[in-house]
Image (cartoon, rainbow, N blue to C red; front, side, top):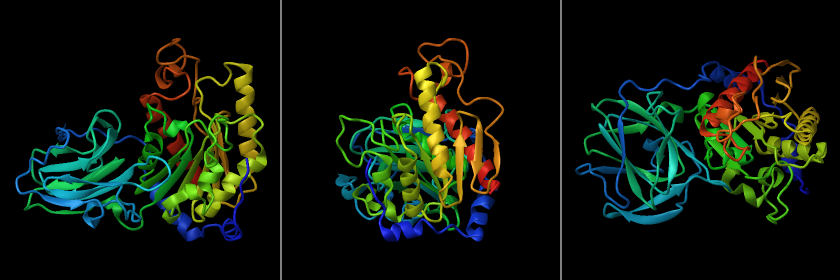
Length: 416
């Protein structure tokens, strides 16, 4: 793998965040739930309208994505992905910035009894109402649609409430003419933000970019910027894919074309999660180059480096050797990284941080058994958490993994 960091970016890598900013992050994490919130006692009725159909709200007012009242955390949103006619007006459909499909985070306050959200393309949306889940599955409501369609939230009363959700592409919201809208709490100044570069665990069908989003919500974040690279990691591992940006370093180096508008993001906690598809010959220098690039990209962030997650790391000698090799390399590379940082080693069940503090990742292994959802063995959690392909997590697996990562990251950061 080749790549370099320019001098100005490398200079940023030597700047550790000040104690005051670290205290802000730690105080925010003290309030973080690290558990999925309860389901609402009376959740709204959520319906998808017919493709291309207009809002059913009489004389509705339309609030577009860039309007501050929508509470979208991505302040750098400035251009539309495409423009289309809807409800007698031309509207812009926004897809949040970055080189890979992302999710924008919205948080808005409204007293409307019906909110019609104008979405685009099929996606899994995560709705929270006043901090509680609007669906039984953690954060999730699945919708299949075309280039433009309405998703309606119907409440039993018209009263002020906070609606938070993440979505990949949308144009705005319709509410009744007499109702109000304002930015929600997580859109306010002072809330923390996270970023993440992940392998296919953050983008493979079944997780649908849900991993980083759920980690962020569990940590109480105000927004998530995530970059997913399916089939890759620290070093390019897909020989059939010639794209030079198809590895962590290129996608992380400040100024690289793959960054696009990511450079505008100011992350407080940066997750670097991957390596499972990299070769055992992955070197310390390759990993260190990635971590230094992340430090230069986000000089005020706490960097969280994590290795691999696998249902049974001892299933074969080859797999076990590969995991041990990559985990050891990541461990060695992060030791020379300017802090603050956290290393999460779920293979050996431990974490350590740049302050020299170590701890356990929990009382039980993260992955147990050799089973999968389609081929259960009756032993271990692979029967529930590993998908049919034997590699990627199921939706329940993503829920489980995001909780383990969030819990461990919070414990380690509070110990800095």
